[in-house]
Picture (tube, rainbow, N blue to C red):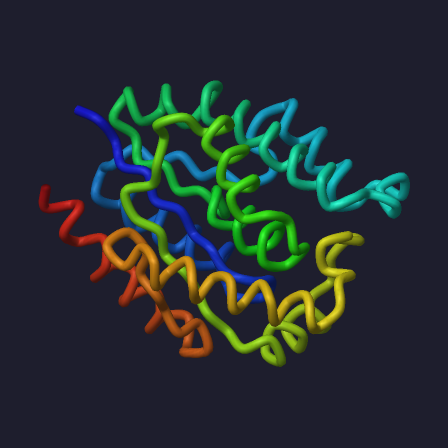
Length: 209
């Protein structure tokens, strides 16, 4: 039996990590095998790329083109080394970000050509697509507040200005509008337990199949 591939998307501070952990625990309580992944990362190669993209002091001059290619290099490795084998083994794969992030951040946020970004994503992931994408939405001001209140290591992606994140937010909205059957919008300003219950409701049709 083939597994299920569920991705979580949203800007920084939208609560993806919390909701993934909650869903994974709930699924495991039902006796399901769950694999939790993150992008970039999830493989030894991907984690090296993650460091380069996010926290390395040597990344301050990184161009948008380099950023796009590195994200998708990590993604290509993750798909072939982990995601496809896990799905073939019947596992539930929960991934913190996937290809929608490249469209939102590198196409809308950085201003790279949309079709070019799509073509690079297509090369990286091949036929591997999420069964469901949960898009956790918070206003940019809420995202900024949550990021200020959490202790984290340096993250180059979070150093962009408000205008960048406004473009990313707009990008996510347009991506969701274009793919309403796959992408479920969730108001992540609600209490975490309410969001978790809405996520469970969203995946129930997939579980029943």
